[in-house]
Amino acid sequence: MMIAACFLLASCSRNSDPAKVNVAQKKDVWSNAEVTRESVRLVLEQAGGAGVIAASQIKDIQVQGANNKTITVDLKHESPDPDQLMKDAAATLIAYSGILLENKGIGTVEVCLYGNPEPGNAKHAAKETVSVAVSREDLQKARDVFQAPVDDYAMLFKHASWYKIHPHLYKSLHYKDQLKTRAYLK
Image (cartoon, rainbow, N blue to C red; front, side, top):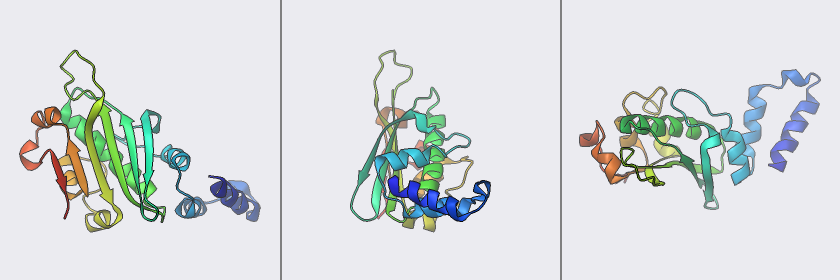
């Protein structure tokens, strides 16, 4: 975080007009920045788009591994429509991985949604409903699938590095015949 701020200040001081600091300079700062929970949270505030869950809904961020880190972003999110929940998870993975994988120290991005897997049930429960991840390599192989807007979330889930779907949510899905409750690429 501190390093990223120093890089940004240095790039601004080299440019006589601070308003002309371009996007490429900011990308360079993130691509070489230290990966911490705080730096990930700050960079994810830029994420947006149709179906993308806002960074304000982040419940927790986990950073695992020494090289090619795995970033897991836990989000509080519910939807009465199970298919819309899956589309939101897919759109969020596309947006978050697009930003986070610009950093050379990150190898995999995982998005986990927490909420009530049975919205019709009056009892409130905060369980993991959907978890989906993509590695840098898998994203490169299926670049055309990982595009917004998400129409067919099942295709994205099939090309993801791994995913898990809560059994109660899975039973309500439109594309359940194309998916499993959990799958891992080999």
